[in-house]
Amino acid sequence: MNILNINSAYAQANYEFKSSKDIASELNESLSGINMLTDKPSNEKIKQMVSQIDAQQLFDSYTISTFNFASDTFKIQGSLSDIFTGENSVADSRIQGILSTIDEKSIGYNGKALYMMDSFDASMLVKDGGFFSVENTADRIADFVLSFAGDDEKLLKAGREGMLRGFKDAEKIWGDALPEISQKTIELATQKVDKKLSQIGANLMDASV
Image 1 (cartoon, rainbow, N blue to C red):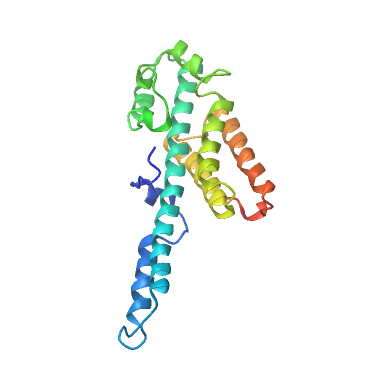
Image 2 (cartoon, rainbow, N blue to C red):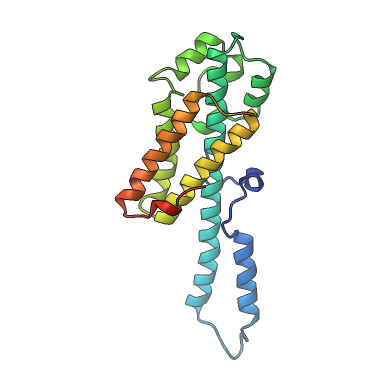
């Protein structure tokens, strides 16, 4: 997934972070109060203002991408679990409708088309060791956050929030609580990110949605 890919999920996520548009507006306001002939702001000051816009764009893109990655992953995992445990041996129209909106390759899956899965195919993917098993899925979601955020507390918390919001978004699309496999997955993924936050001495009390 392109970490700079911003789409309509931004509106769904309802993040409270300041957008790059807001920062750009603030920059314009700041510069409008400066007389360029008499005040002559330093190049460093202008560079700092501009860099804040670039940093915020990257920050926004990261949180949105985390949201999208988690939401799509949980919609797929929940759908496969339903195919495997449900009464239908193949994806019904509801599941097909959910899966048809997702770019499978964007989350790293390159196997058989998901909408064509039968019960056996789905079982192979969600069982222990399968691509969409609890452990492997939690690892991918947590690694998506950790590999970008590193030791940056702000990014770690933003990524944590993004994946939790993505989980809630998947439940909203699902129309009910996601299957147990997904409940266990988000719990494990959150634990992995929380472990990293603890390692850098971050306060976990304000790292929740």
